Length: 179
Length: 185
Image (tube, rainbow over all chains, first blue to last red; front, side):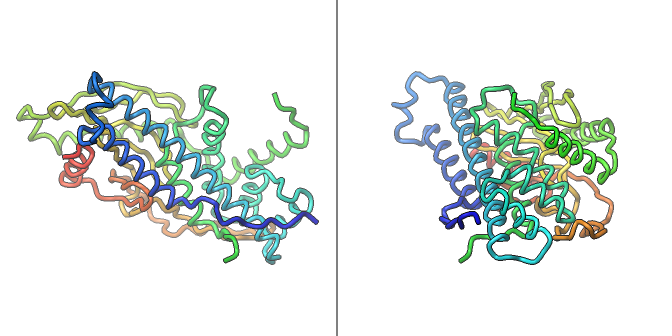
């Protein structure tokens, strides 16, 4: 019997990540504006275009880092649900399928090929959303593995990733960690 | 290259086949033509919002051609709209069809912020899927429950930023306010 996981309850919350993004983006915009106390020293001899370019680079980096954290939050939500359905011995067909998977593989299950595919197979109405999520995970892998190759998938960004994560997490009956 | 077993490949083929059977075929050429037509209508709308200022010569509008890549639509040319207000430049850049329940999106970048215009159903107020998700036994034969099966009327709206993404009607007043916000005016 695989060992039971103790939930840390430190998994990221997408709303908190959105507030973090807003605060940091706003701070960056202020830092790169003449209203910042350090502006004249920090950007001495900079041309306006150079300031703008540097700010946009920082904002783009923030977008990608936040998007990666949102993917981590989505992964945590699915993995917690998977384990809870195994521990709580829920009677529905999907929980039973997860328990069979858990018996074979414990926590070493693939999010995309096993957990998401089980959701797709055992739910009605989730197919398109899960398809979109799996496609978006190409972006997650690109971010997590160093962005060193030219991506052959559509452009994702913070807004697209957040909106997808929010739709998935609000639409699917996912179990959270116990109170 | 990672080694793939025959079983893994068979499962992959099965997955692709089942999703192809479950969904009706999409005419991607038509989708692309529609999307470009909607983009043109957005630009016309924005030009009409700014007509007075453009005629006075206080605002300049020009277009730049760029390319967009989307998985099913391929690579295709689109126009970016550039609005010049004094020394401030605002770009309207098409980014494709990535939001759930949306047919397309155009980012509006200003010197002090960013906003998004989305092509969504006239009645949509947030990016919520129209289908209810329910756990089933795969042996059951059930149809997805679509909340509202009415025909979609696509309109451009302003999407607010997360965490509470809301869609706001696009009109002269809301567009001018958006421009002010991203220009820190």
